[in-house]
Amino acid sequence: MSGTSAKAARLPLDALRIARSCALPLIMWFSLGRFVRWALLYAAAHLSHGSWYQLRIVGVLFIFTLVVMVSLATVVGMLYTVREALAETRARRAGDEAQETIFGALNRTALTFAGLYMTWGLVDQDMRDFENIDRTLNPDRQFVDQLQGVQSTIGDGLTGLDVRISVAAMVVAYAIKWFAGRRHENKPGRFTGVLTTFGELAFVFYGLTATVAALKLREDWIEHRALVMGVSDATEDVRESPFFEWLGDVWPLLLDALVLPLAWLTVGILVYGAYAEDTQTTIRGTRLEGVGARVERSHNWTQVTLAKLTGGFTSRWIPLLNSLRLTAKGGPALFGLYALLYVGLHVGGDYLGRLLDYATAGGPYLWIVTGVGTSFVVDLLVTVLSMCLIAATYDQAATRKRLTEEPEDVEVGA
Image (tube, one colour):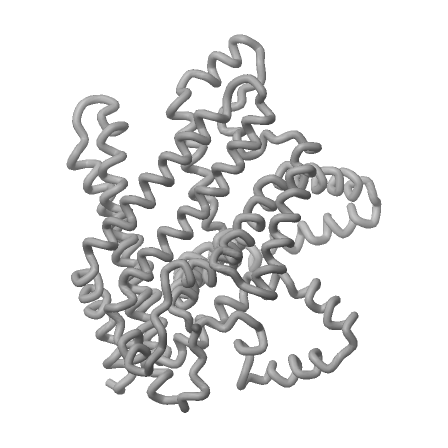
């Protein structure tokens, strides 16, 4: 076994060591975050029904934006808590690097975290939890609304905004995002990154209704064009081919096994300050560096056009590529073992949840009460161990990079 593989094999032990030394603050961060998140979802679900419905929905979307911000703060807080247990942090302290506050880590992490949170579907669980709480608080409302012949609003709190109000709210949210973003670029303040992130999330959530309406109009217009109808038939045949059917079955597994672990590792790297925020740093030393240099020398309009065309790619993939490149410094065994342990934790958490549900099952409908406690315990264990695993993986990769490269080539945050 090579030295790199031997060090990677210590990854689960390092993660357990971090969990043992930082167990209490990790539990406190998780518990506080869950309590605030649940309280906000409860308030949003309670607010989503009644008179002045559209005004209520505006408030619901504002609260839901805060829910995502609370998730961000909880993750950053948990990762920041274990910072002093890492060998890389101690090495930086020995190199006279100033200690960063949690607000600095949160401000730096917020915007990219929000991009990962939205583009890779991590927000879906928040939406499902909101709908579940809404239905639990109003178990008979949908049935009563049907008897009264009125349209039920159960589960519509995130999508029930009027199109005109949606557009107006998008404008306000965009103004907040633009103003805070300019401040963050030119003269970063203590919370400019957080405020920019809030504007970005609000822009997405408030604009959801308007975006869906615009897409529906676009689909209706396109469906009546003969050429497009012919192309749609052809592409439908392609999508039904055996290869695409196989890809449709495999892609969700790849997401769960590789992409999502890498996305969460990216968040950890962001918190610990070793993240390259631009594409140029990520592609440095690769064949793409020459292409990037030629783009930098091109006309301004060419750069703007390419930025627009590749914006979705860069927001989705560049953070992950940056994390994969840093992790590769620790050897392929490190990332492979990290992904295996990450998936194993979540699969084991599912089985543990079933075991606890079975062990606490009693009379009829008792699971409604006991399920909350068992779910909290399982989520606590899985989340704490996952954060420790992320920290241990970063620690090994960053330490190896620092030891194998020249000091001036090591990219670390402030």
